[in-house]
Image (cartoon, rainbow, N blue to C red; front, side, top):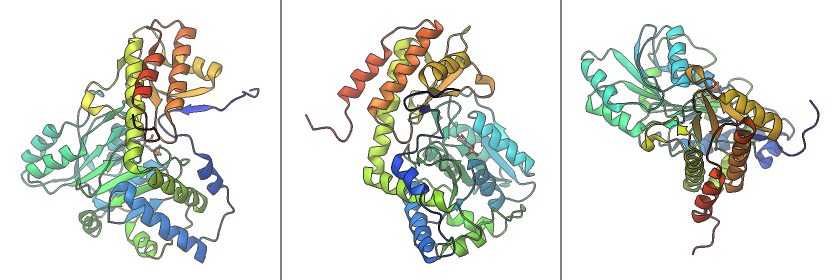
Length: 396
Ligand code: PLP
């Protein structure tokens, strides 16, 4: 393909745009992963990442994509044949349940409609029936990236407690961590799974397990086979800032810078910036006359919006035209939503002007593809953003 002038707009819901200071840190010369400089870096990132998960407990960093951290969460805490309870929020919850079955777990999935988050009442009812506590873990996805629905994790915690059930709570925060408020300790989560390529603004390649004392205790008796993913040796060696095998030294250099940026902006400001972008996007989408895939306003995702196109119009064709003409990538519909939905990622390193740029690209695409819509959605987004200026604004 010939050179396309201007910057590519990477507006899929992760991987996200990597900011220049993070890229620069990754591009620094690779260092000795057993030397003193790495020890300092290791200690810094292992301490800094805890504040993002809002935990005082250890967080394990794997040189792997999020899928690896999913596997690590399961195989460190569970034994072959264990029953676990999952909730179908969309594509990613489904993939996680398939993985659990492949690992030899008995995964029971409460069906969902891909338009709502986890039904805490259904979890409570199922756990209340489980009088002999055969269910060992409840596994949920905080932010379902295929649908743009954010589940209420604290409500699920309360549901488990109300049922008086000892099951572990395992939560996937791959597309919410560093974008949407998340509290590992306060919400009593036992294992939180995260990834580097979304709110943390890094390329793909790192993933995380934040672990509670209860999860750590479970890992001492859990019998699923594990070696690379094993927490025990990792924690022992992490205590000195090192890793049992060669870590992703350069990505960790980038992570250290990204953590500094998130802390400098302040997590609450980061979340507010995401909330604002999401609200502007939804106002624009509604003005165009399209439905948002998430059917429950209290569960709207602040990191992405999945937009349903009217029947008879191809979301994949729209995305292809937008890529070819405007050099912007949007997320595709996954599984049953293929070609019906496109997803706008508004997470990671972006500001208001980028949000309006993205929406402009979509509105131009709608025109190009002849998809009937109310023009002027971007104007609605601009009015909202201008009236709800971010933290840098001068107070009125
Ligand atoms: N869980 C969620 C919510 C995701 O969005 C993704 C990827 O997008 C995954 C899990 C899988 O992570 P990875 O593709 O990094 O293995």
